[in-house]
Length: 146
Image (cartoon, rainbow, N blue to C red; front, side, top):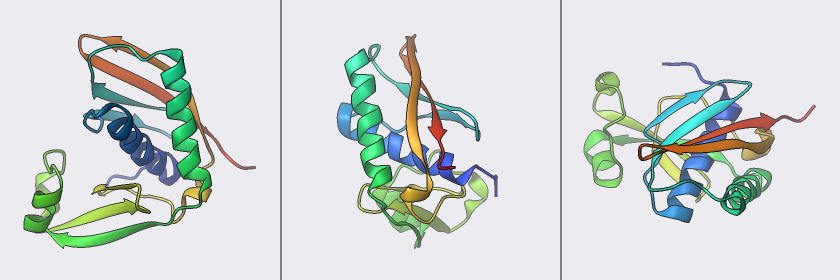
């Protein structure tokens, strides 16, 4: 299993669902998650406004400070394929799929590490965004509790 920074990976799940809900886009098709800073790429039609960036940051932080439990559920590949796009999962995942749920806010197939509760993540800080050739890139970091 690929190792991810659990707080950053959990924040990425919340960011993805926020983008889906706010803009009706798909989850990020590419991301680079590291402890200090991360980025997610989305297929999109335009740049974000400064107001939209603030709204994304606010919504992600609203979920994180709510102290939502993060849990996993194991389902068959057949069941998972009825509910989710499985294209990004490695072929070696087999016939059982792990679904990570961030409360009622987000659910998706995932092999990475996560926190047990969003209160462990810290504050989501929207760094910047850029748009080029149909790709919106969002850069972010976490301000972690001391």
